[in-house]
Image (cartoon, rainbow, N blue to C red; front, top):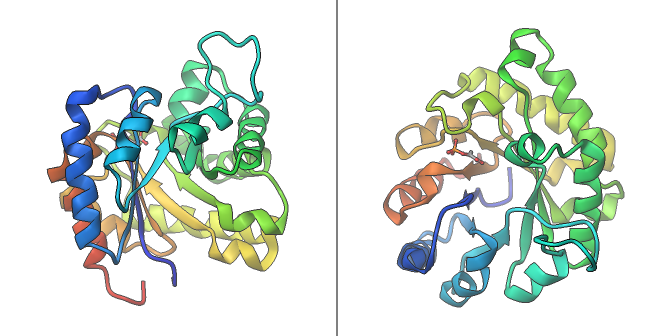
Length: 253
Ligand code: PEP
């Protein structure tokens, strides 16, 4: 895999200005660990302030509304987060799919709006425990990819996919490395079917209870190009532990 590993922190609904010191420390770590591409997605309210701390790391949003603007009380558009300093946004996180009833079609609208505003994208997919137990994990993820990803070979370089099994998010449970590799290979085949050759270069992140002590193992699985990290991204100490694990991966991974 030729691209640098990509380690992204999703702060979810955590963080006030008191957490800017963590953002600063993560950025200083990123400056030392240049073998890894580092980014964090703080809540909307901190995007501008985190951008000011960020010399090297990327800064992103966790969601955007599909419309450019208008009567959507409480929502935030892609152009607004771009203006605040974001260079990417997450879309389709399972917490949004569950808490806000977001369908694949809705995620696709958001993805298109983000690209139109000049943002890069992290598109999240992943099965529930019930779906995995029923042997439907690959079919569910395939449907999410077909339904949520904007098409067009030229878009592939702006897109990252995050595979996050819902049952592994925030639970301390993770799939086996073999299961991660199998799903990532499945996603790779699907990306090549959607984007042609360009699909081979799309990074596929693993997300779900990644911690400093399991990061090396999960990141070394076949076709894993980095990690989307929730809980363990909230302090510089634990997040940089994961970044260090990524920096220590063998070069040809
Ligand atoms: C996430 O929400 O994207 C996530 C992976 O969370 P955690 O690392 O806490 O499981």
